Length: 100
Image 1 (cartoon, rainbow, N blue to C red):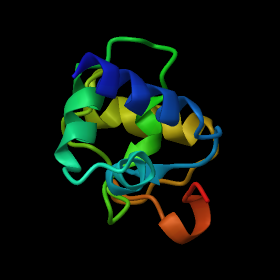
Image 2: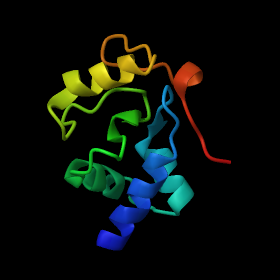
Image 3: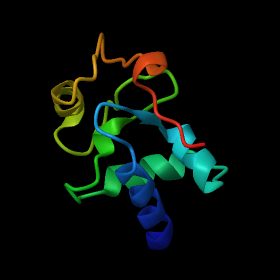
Protein backbone atom coordinates (compact mmCIF):
# COMPACT_ATOMS: atom_id res chain seq x y z
CA UNK A 1 0.00 0.00 0.00
CA UNK A 2 2.96 2.33 0.36
CA UNK A 3 2.94 3.06 -3.38
CA UNK A 4 -0.77 3.84 -3.21
CA UNK A 5 -0.29 6.07 -0.17
CA UNK A 6 2.42 8.00 -2.02
CA UNK A 7 0.06 8.51 -4.97
CA UNK A 8 -2.58 9.84 -2.59
CA UNK A 9 -0.09 12.18 -0.91
CA UNK A 10 1.04 13.47 -4.30
CA UNK A 11 -2.56 14.33 -5.21
CA UNK A 12 -3.11 16.05 -1.87
CA UNK A 13 -0.02 18.20 -2.46
CA UNK A 14 -1.69 19.48 -5.66
CA UNK A 15 -4.60 21.06 -3.76
CA UNK A 16 -3.96 24.81 -3.69
CA UNK A 17 -3.98 26.78 -0.45
CA UNK A 18 -7.43 28.17 0.25
CA UNK A 19 -9.17 25.18 -1.34
CA UNK A 20 -10.36 21.77 -0.13
CA UNK A 21 -11.28 18.52 -1.81
CA UNK A 22 -13.01 15.36 -0.69
CA UNK A 23 -11.79 11.86 -0.01
CA UNK A 24 -14.07 10.75 -2.86
CA UNK A 25 -12.57 13.21 -5.34
CA UNK A 26 -9.08 11.91 -4.62
CA UNK A 27 -10.32 8.33 -5.01
CA UNK A 28 -12.00 9.28 -8.30
CA UNK A 29 -8.90 10.80 -9.89
CA UNK A 30 -6.78 7.84 -8.80
CA UNK A 31 -9.33 5.30 -10.02
CA UNK A 32 -9.93 3.82 -6.56
CA UNK A 33 -13.19 2.08 -5.73
CA UNK A 34 -12.62 2.17 -1.97
CA UNK A 35 -12.65 5.75 -0.66
CA UNK A 36 -11.59 4.51 2.77
CA UNK A 37 -8.09 3.89 1.43
CA UNK A 38 -7.71 7.64 1.04
CA UNK A 39 -8.71 8.11 4.67
CA UNK A 40 -6.32 5.39 5.81
CA UNK A 41 -3.46 7.04 3.92
CA UNK A 42 -4.17 10.50 5.29
CA UNK A 43 -4.51 9.24 8.83
CA UNK A 44 -1.13 7.47 8.51
CA UNK A 45 0.61 10.53 7.05
CA UNK A 46 3.33 12.02 9.22
CA UNK A 47 4.78 14.34 6.56
CA UNK A 48 4.06 17.96 7.42
CA UNK A 49 4.58 18.94 3.77
CA UNK A 50 1.43 17.08 2.70
CA UNK A 51 -1.55 19.38 3.42
CA UNK A 52 -3.97 16.71 4.63
CA UNK A 53 -6.01 19.44 6.31
CA UNK A 54 -7.34 20.34 2.84
CA UNK A 55 -9.32 17.09 2.60
CA UNK A 56 -12.88 16.90 3.95
CA UNK A 57 -15.77 14.48 3.57
CA UNK A 58 -18.38 14.64 0.80
CA UNK A 59 -20.50 17.03 2.86
CA UNK A 60 -17.58 19.37 3.51
CA UNK A 61 -17.23 18.26 7.12
CA UNK A 62 -13.87 18.31 8.84
CA UNK A 63 -12.26 15.05 9.90
CA UNK A 64 -13.15 14.20 13.48
CA UNK A 65 -9.95 12.13 13.64
CA UNK A 66 -7.60 14.53 11.86
CA UNK A 67 -4.21 12.90 12.38
CA UNK A 68 -2.33 16.00 13.51
CA UNK A 69 -3.94 17.30 16.73
CA UNK A 70 -7.59 16.72 15.77
CA UNK A 71 -10.38 18.71 14.24
CA UNK A 72 -9.44 22.00 15.91
CA UNK A 73 -6.03 21.92 14.23
CA UNK A 74 -7.63 21.16 10.86
CA UNK A 75 -9.95 24.15 11.38
CA UNK A 76 -7.04 26.40 12.38
CA UNK A 77 -5.01 25.44 9.31
CA UNK A 78 -7.92 25.94 6.91
CA UNK A 79 -8.89 29.28 8.41
CA UNK A 80 -5.28 30.46 8.21
CA UNK A 81 -5.55 29.87 4.43
CA UNK A 82 -8.79 31.86 4.18
CA UNK A 83 -11.18 28.90 4.13
CA UNK A 84 -14.35 29.66 6.11
CA UNK A 85 -15.33 26.87 8.50
CA UNK A 86 -18.81 27.01 10.01
CA UNK A 87 -19.93 24.35 12.47
CA UNK A 88 -17.01 22.09 11.43
CA UNK A 89 -18.06 22.33 7.78
CA UNK A 90 -16.64 23.96 4.64
CA UNK A 91 -18.89 25.17 1.82
CA UNK A 92 -17.71 23.04 -1.10
CA UNK A 93 -19.42 25.24 -3.68
CA UNK A 94 -17.13 28.08 -2.62
CA UNK A 95 -13.91 26.37 -1.52
CA UNK A 96 -14.04 23.01 -3.33
CA UNK A 97 -11.25 21.85 -5.68
CA UNK A 98 -11.65 19.25 -8.41
CA UNK A 99 -9.28 17.82 -10.95
CA UNK A 100 -10.47 17.79 -14.55
